[in-house]
Length: 131
Image (cartoon, rainbow, N blue to C red):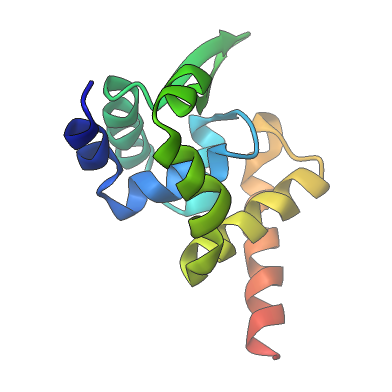
């Protein structure tokens, strides 16, 4: 994988959003689609492109497949680490996605009750609109 191919894989808003929320740890596709409010097919398509670029890897646990950032690739391509650590928090949409993820984690939700993420999204949106 060369740098140009890596940049192409990261050159899509949805894929950047996925990478953004995966920086906090593994998630299954149902969690990714719920947190980002995208369809399962859209999430799977983008995850496939990220996996082909070796940015994301996966593992199976029980009946769920979990996706996580590929640490080997992050170490090899330091610019991705810089992007994750320094740049993603500057974008409003990415900050909002991360807030939803944090609310999801704080509520102790998982694949079994992922549908409750909509409540978290509503609370975050209410808080933002009241400011």
